[in-house]
Length: 101
Image (cartoon, rainbow, N blue to C red; front, side):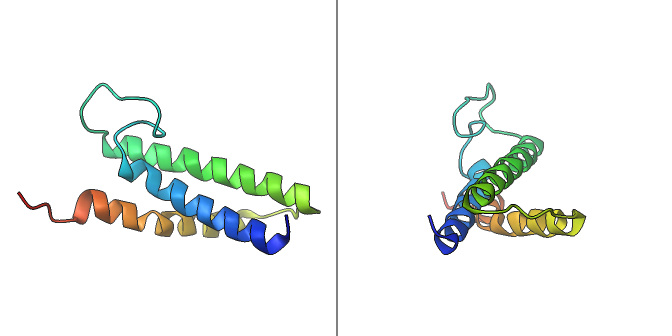
């Protein structure tokens, strides 16, 4: 897999994972929750766990392609902000969309 394709794959995976907590009522889209609606704090916790899963997958892919570079706190601050921005469409769909009927 070349570097450009791997980069686009990680970006697409991050966009899908960031919107996953807002698009369904199951935990990680697999585990049903007892109540009918998933609480907001659980969606945020799920978002954080998915961020670390995507980050781990990206690191694994980077190591497989070549040398993995060491990152400092700035890298993680930027990527978590980017992950939150990628989650915005799912948040709008869940909480800000006007429902008719």
